[in-house]
Image (cartoon, rainbow over all chains, first blue to last red; front, side, top):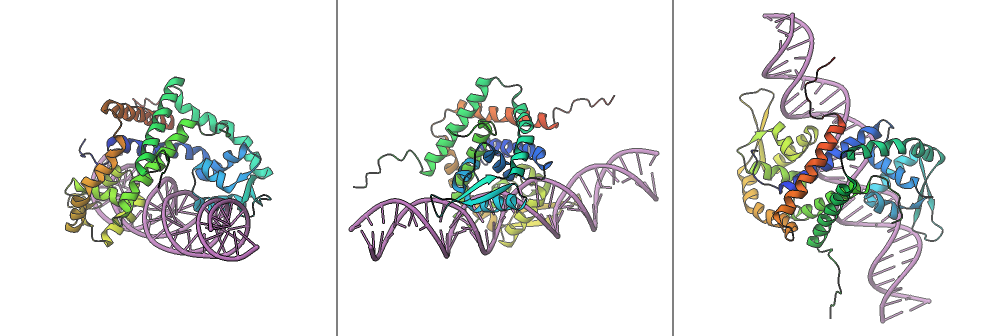
Length: 156
Length: 156
DNA sequence: GAATAATTGTTCTAATTAGAACATGATAAT
DNA sequence: ATTATCATGTTCTAATTAGAACAATTATTC
């Protein structure tokens, strides 16, 4: 290796693995003429009867400014629709149309196989361990960011 | 949890951790009026006397179409310069200017502390283990992608 | 209840992103 | 050597991204 430590190498590896995974997942999705964020929205809505934009963003990890555009493009394609919430005048409900549900049901099982294939050589405990390790790092970052455990903020 | 398995949860956690890390790292970098990819280029060049655009892309994980723009913006800021390679007429060498080197030297140690702080509670072996686990997943994805081990491609 | 604060989603901007097409220079095959 | 193939970097496009500002609505506080 030529390069001296820049970001610690474990973090570089995190970026690399993330990037490679996205390109792997995108390959399957692009055959459907959808982008990865668009497909992520579809499969997230696939298990529900519609949800608030806010919750949809939390599930998909798409920030709200971005999500507006992603949902609009899916609306243009006729795969989702927006409805005003009856309980909250600020809120929109997003849900699959018939066509969107058809896409979900016809493609999701294959998509899941495509993804799960990555773990063919993993024991279940190994997957759980990796997940736990990622959660640990995630929490370490949040704590360093100051979004820590939010204990009693005794401003007296 | 309400949501049924979509992406396997370990992969969702990979995305979440990646995203949170980027926002953590960006916070420090934005104070320098640089974006994260721009700063990544600067610290990658900081250890060298200039390198090919191709190699710069490999080190930073930035694809070539994107890298052209990132380098151009750094050029506009006077932090890097492009030189024609003498050995290869297609190739450009990118290197830090004086100003770019000053930014690197004055900010990198603090940046490194900022990043390393994430691992305060880690034993060194734990970091190595996590890195090895990420490398393993990365390779599993590459193999599933077909970029596998590229053994003897004995066609027929 | 009226003023203040917080929440929800859209709009706007600059930058990044992947991917494809392209021009130019280098390399290989014949 | 000449053709065909490959490598390097730029340009182009559509989409995503984060972040900030904003309008509309809801919740809180006094």
